[in-house]
Length: 151
Figure 1 (cartoon, helix red, strand yellow):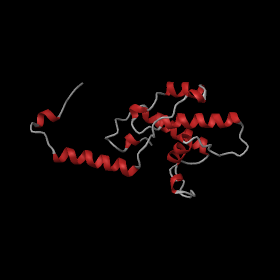
Figure 2 (figure 1 turned 45 degrees about the vertical axis):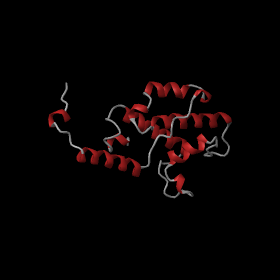
Figure 3 (figure 1 turned 135 degrees about the vertical axis):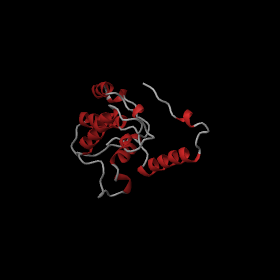
Figure 4 (figure 1 turned 30 degrees about the vertical axis):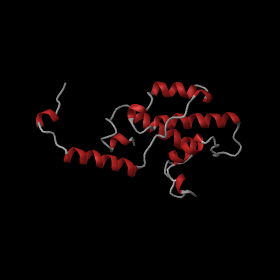
C-alpha cells in the first residue's frame, strides 16, 4: 500500500497511490517474490526494492533465471527502473500511468535511475513524529490564521 495512506506528511491520497501499487506489482513480477523476504540470506535483501535498487545502481545483474537471454535481462532491468520510479516515497515524484507506459515501451538505455525511492519505515515514523511535535509545541498566536477554508 502506498505510504501516503499511512503517513500524512508524505502527501494526499490520489491516483498516484495506484501508480505505487503498480510499481510494487512490477517488483514482485521481476523478483518472482513478495517485496518482503524474511528468509533472505542478507539483511539488506529483506526489503526487496531497497536491495534491487542497490544492485541496479551498481550495475549488477539481478539473477532470477540462470538461462535468461540478453533481451530478457534488459526487459527485467527496464521493469525494475520503471517500478522504482513508481514507488517513489512522495506521490508528486511518481510518474503518471501514461508516462509509465511510455517508459515500458522505450529502450532501457533511454531510462535513467530514479533517486532512491524510500525511507525506512522508522525514518518515516520519525518524520511524522517531528511534524506532529512541531505543530503541538509551536501554536500560532492567532488561531484563526492557522486554518484555511477553501472551496
